[in-house]
Amino acid sequence: MEDYFINQEAISPSCLMKILQGDKLPKEGMMWEFKNELKPIDLYCYLYAKYGPPNGIQSLLRSDDSDNLIHWEWALAGEHGITMIQGQNFRSEVHLMGHFKDKNISIEDFISQIKSDIGNHGKKISELRKNLEKWTQFVNPYKRIESAVNQHFEKLNDLALDPIKDKVPHPTTEEEWKTYGDRLSAASDKYSYAVGLTFGLRSMLPVLAESFVNLVLFILCRPDIKSNYRLFQSTIRQAIDIRIQSLHINCIGFESAIDYSSSECGNFHTLMNDRNDLLHGNVEVNKLSIGDVFFNKNVPLFLQYEDFWDKSIGVSLKSVKYDGIKSDREVVANFIEYILSKLKPEIREQIEIIMDKGQLGFNHKTGRVGILFPDHMVDFRAVFKDA
Image (tube, rainbow, N blue to C red; front, side, top):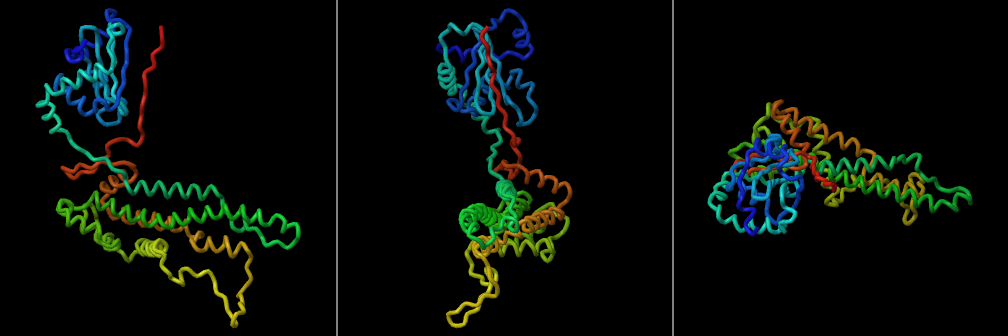
């Protein structure tokens, strides 16, 4: 059995069906699975070079795209039965049907025999690999940030904040004083979490809009710019307002120019400036103001009295502009919609599909961006019961 798996013959699907439907082939079988002991691409190219195109039934049943449980299958006939080799999403599988149980063979034998035979088909394998399209999978930065923004808003909504109802009033009686510390501490924990979420959202929302602009540039940038590395880098590293205003110049697919004086762009520009102040810790007194107080020498004179809630939780909410976080989300949504509205309908449809995908593919040779796989991933395993 030292060379059993490299001395087999490919059989046609029709012949295989007759064998499987007949009563001559024993119903006993074995199944092995492995991952990268033999790299999927190496196994595929070896089998293709030696036996021709995949001839298994599953290869005939697959849909003509990448959304399949089984991507390829070879059916081979040998002295002791049928060997079916499959490439799936997470592993390769070998299915044996025939007189195999008493032959003292293992998956290690299969792998070692294939490896020893690959070199005999090196030239054909090299030719096959030259004709393969190479795609680099990458994470869609827009979708990644959008998902994080949505998660933050979901968590913020789950807190069901109501500063008016939740406010713990300053105690006026002995009984209120007894529980005041615990009540204020519990509310403080809840609102501190909300402040953290809001801070994160105020940081991410402008970045979400900017990542959309960068995605549009990457996908629609004119070929003469994209093919020139230095020119493309210069284009995508421009200040954000310049990138936006020159989208219709640097990209294909726009029906009209971007009007940066529009309310959608103006509101986004303000949001971006606020975000920069927030992240860079800029000391802008007017923007950071939480109130005024007067002094007569060392004597403070308040405009009005505030309680512990106002001076702690209230200040934190004001500092991150909690009340306006939902309107900030609308600013970004309106800005993105405005840019999309400037695209040709068929181009807009393609961009919206890509925006919604978490993972994309890039072909360095052709410069194409593609959707290589569906968002869902599927797997299955055959279960054999003892007779």
